[in-house]
Amino acid sequence: MGNICRSPTAEAVFRRVLEEEGRGLQVHVDSAGTHGYHIGDPPDRRTIEAARRRGVEMGHLRARQVSVEDFHAFDLLVAMDEANLTHLENMAPTVHTARVRLFMDYAPQSGHREVPDPYYGGAAGFEQVLDLVEAASRGLLAELKR
Image (cartoon, rainbow, N blue to C red; front, side, top):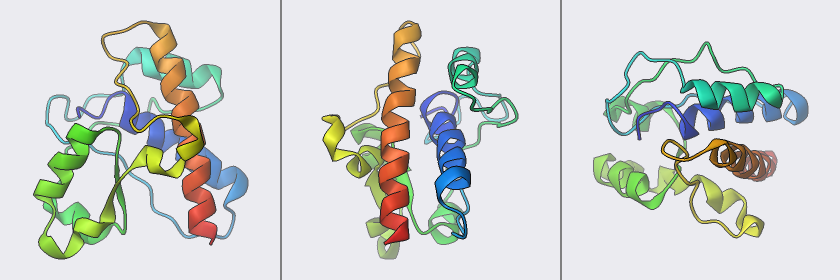
């Protein structure tokens, strides 16, 4: 939504998964929020700290908002939850609506359809986001390899 918790986590974790397991794949990864609340801000400090404990760096990332151009520049846009999925589907040019999916569709074994927003919760929420994003990242990479 604001591009300071879940989506930068997904960007940073997926980049790491690509480095470790996706050698040779040409993939451009970026994150953006559906709303402009935090444009130009770094990820939430709790997000940065949780990721750093797992060896994932994201302090260099800055929030931006999704634009119509993203639907032309990227083959796939993934949403963290149903509300953001709907927002992206409504925003997408008609010819590109098939390019929008829920990120957790790539980790059906997780039992989660959405990545919950940890912003108003405690530290455990940020750890859960990392667990879910890691699972979805590996699932997405497996699909890209196919």
